[in-house]
Length: 444
Image (cartoon, rainbow, N blue to C red; front, side):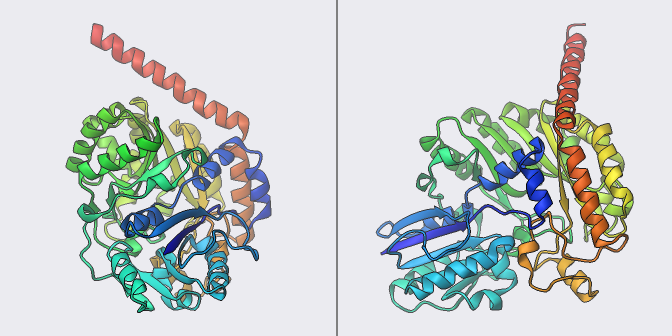
């Protein structure tokens, strides 16, 4: 038996001007390359759950779907896709099925819209894939594959997570490989399309398992760069510090996404730096209270942290950890003034790096449900616009064209060679000054 694990990679903006800018602006190019080069950890994990008597193959599929199918002689294919490429995934699935190959679809989009996905698959997985896959495999071997495997009521624990099949990858094709240390997030931002849409329980993976996965990666890549594929690393500070102490011994460099609260804990920041942290991406979302107010549905947590944004960025970067601040344009209650607000905040805060996106109503999110109920979704089922760079809703404080043009101009300013260079020069200057001041205080 032979199973293909096919990842639909390489998301591109539909907006042609942004694609053109992405070929020339240094900062934009770097971030696009990073995103495009990440393998599908979900598929590698399912491969790790597949019986060893089954032949498996992992395939990245970045291009257009044509008549030629990737891979040969598969009995079963599992396809993973972002919403932006789900229609390509459906076309590929239809081709495989026409060729007599059974197809399984799963992931965030499929869990949000199972009826849609089922039109293009022999089986779908709703919710987390790990508890479903062994059952699905057994059913397939016995010729009784079910149409739906729904794990939303399962009690899956990350202590039972399998070892992903990293050996299926050629590390020369990637600039980083992914490891998950925890799943979920205690906050509920209305636009978030992360794993909270398939499992609403926050879970942590035992430190020993995380280290084992990193060591497995080191078997194929002697000096790896690791991205922790977490929704929000360091939520559990006790677990995080245990992990960082263990990570110090592995001598790897790493990146993750987290929230601004890490700035409150100097011990944590020091451990992060000592264990090889190169950069953190933090969802700042907006530099204005109008933009932040109401984004986080449970306690309005992000709005309450706004006054400390500048100080927090400075504290994190003083430890030599660069911050990639992520901002969302087009948030409700923000208008054309928001573009200048973001640019000036980036300038004043000393951020080393910045990521700007457009508010995107992904299916399955509270944002999508709200905008749909308000009649503000512009094109139904236009999932190809879920790129984070395209507009598919009516903003409430500006026109669609104002958002598109303002975003484009902001991108041109933020990611120009001179502005990018100056941003990084200021970071290095501040870091040197901070270290000199610390040394002077220590020797005094």
